[in-house]
Length: 102
Image (cartoon, rainbow, N blue to C red):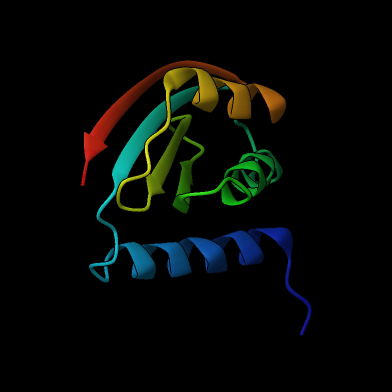
């Protein structure tokens, strides 16, 4: 069975939701407003960069709101400069970030 990029992204989003709701998330959540998010391919590029980053548990992207939500493992935090660097390296501009302890 051949999966499209959209179906693949939906699958990984579902897995992320299941994982984050399972009680394993105890780190920090970063909500980043990002300019230029327009398609699943854009989301995949950012998701790929964050999933390769040590300490990241999950990445969820809301294209309609231009929001990237990153959850980290317990004890792992990022400075705003590092988050901005990852977004910039993905080819986008981070407008703002909020941080919440889980």
